[in-house]
Length: 413
Image (cartoon, rainbow, N blue to C red; front, top):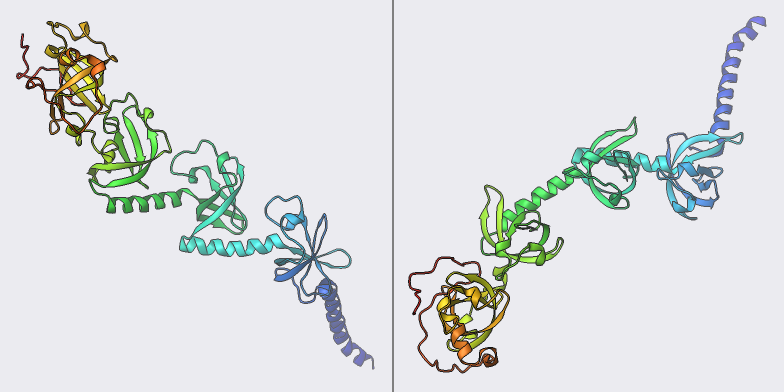
């Protein structure tokens, strides 16, 4: 009998241990049904309090999500993340309290999915969109389903002095490094920008040709011109190609960010240079100039330059004519400054128009003989007969002035 009791003792002890384990497991998981730590379940938000929310995951009782486990972002209220009736994914953390309340985390469930997505994105080089949620020392914190980090050196191709403007923006990034165990995700906005810029540049260079009209944006302004963004490639708009008239600085016509239409003048693909023109888009003011300024007629003009051999008079922006020194007055003039001053408005008579050479010969002397400014007439279709055949004179248009007197010009006196 004693031997039988002794033989049965090990079996009884084994059974007791199994029962104890079952009891412990029951206490640990009994209220949660089949929910075990590490599981990700679907649940419905059934109650929201100041400290967290209750979620029905189909267990014997609702599980609790504390406020800190709702989101990887800093939040003040549960309502900032969930609302009553929302169906959400939750991660089973375990159980807490004497009653074994099921402890859940929405943040961990979101992060588990986010890690999987980031791992795939790292392999496929997928470009992700992520809102910037925080500016910290050395870079930006973005939301990619978890807290991702963009170092300052990976924000843009150049150095970024001020990170604050990025706060609240959604940026395009690529995953460059992840360490799931250290919960570290490093992202790069710079890589995406460099790649996109390269693609845009290749597209522009594949299409652009000399003589084309392109829409662009003023990127920067210098003393000698402006750089125009043509959609990924910058072209130079020199100050001499901005206007048919004279300007002292590009800022008189342009400002940074201004949309603009320009003509492609020259291309140098080897050096990546593009020369642009603005005045060419509107056409030359010398087009049909002979129809606007008729030989023998008197017009109003402004003195814009004095030379040793005469005076240049602007008839309209981009169209200047020359009053030879012999055509300034009825008497001999040694210095044009004796008769007119820069900026003065005078009457001039058109002696000759040469559209091809962009030259108009003018006479102040003959205009004054016929009444000066009082004799200025509006342009009409009728051409008055000249009192005398105009002398052959040479004039210079804006941007093509020469300080040397041509041989064909001589003082009649």
